[in-house]
Amino acid sequence: MAQYPYQKASKYPDLAAVYRNCSGPGGLKLAEYMADAMDLQPGWKVLDVGTNRGYQTCFLAKEFGPFIAGIDPGRNAADILMMNAREWGVEDRVLALQLGVPDTKFAGESFDAVYCTTTLEMLRGMHGEQGYLEGVAEIYRVLRPGGVFGLGEPMHRDRPIPEEIYPYVTQGGRPAPWSVCFSTLDKTAALLQSAGFEILKAKEPCDGPLWWQEFVTYDPEVGDDKVVIERDQNRWVTFGCIIARKPARH
Ligand SMILES: C[S@@+](CC[C@H](N)C(=O)[O-])C[C@H]1O[C@@H](n2cnc3c(N)ncnc32)[C@H](O)[C@@H]1O
Image (tube, rainbow, N blue to C red; front, side):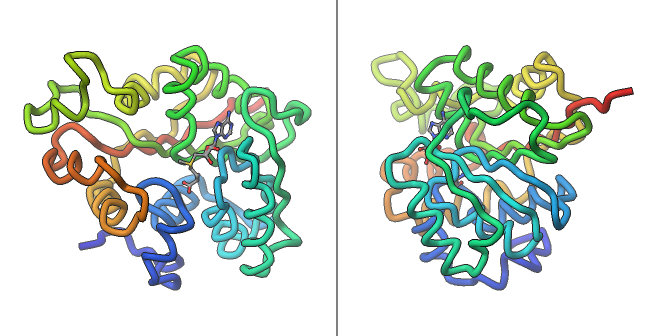
């Protein structure tokens, strides 16, 4: 049962379509939760890091009214985002670019806000903790002083791995490739602080289990995640959202 009001996401009730076009738990519910927590305002210049097909980007542009530069290094991501932006009627407020962190090419202090869901943890998987840190440092660089960073990503609780999911989280006693992407909420908040951010909110939202459940039910490419989520019963796998601010200049 959804707890958050989702006044905007509920306008898009076809969850099969939402999860076909988003990649990760939460879909448009996550986007609305994050945008509200970031206090996203019409007219803001926002950077969306890791858009994939850009459904969340289009939703944010349409329902909250910012200008959004969406970046993703994926080969077709920019074309697909612009195709979706035209379908959503927001092509005048969305710019899609084939770029990624840490080399975004933007001038420092270009954005009022940075939005990033289910992307930075992939950098950890590909390039280790250093890759994650470099992504965060770039986000800090392109934000204006006082600008807001909204981060939402799969995380794990700070507790032993339940034995029911142990074979999926590890391979022969070593962490499975996907599981090394995940960190805890506290460690992630500490990492953002060490990069210079002030933490405004760090939370595992009450609806995280609902978002995971929707993901394993509707995402057409879910694979083993379905078994993990069903066996885990919300004990180890979680979803964390952090709203942080680059300190204002005094
Ligand atoms: C799991 S998808 C998340 C997409 C979207 N935020 C959503 O929730 O629907 C992660 C995306 O990050 C992109 N990505 C990978 N490396 C990246 C980088 N260095 N900078 C920005 N995006 C990156 C991938 O191409 C992929 O499309």
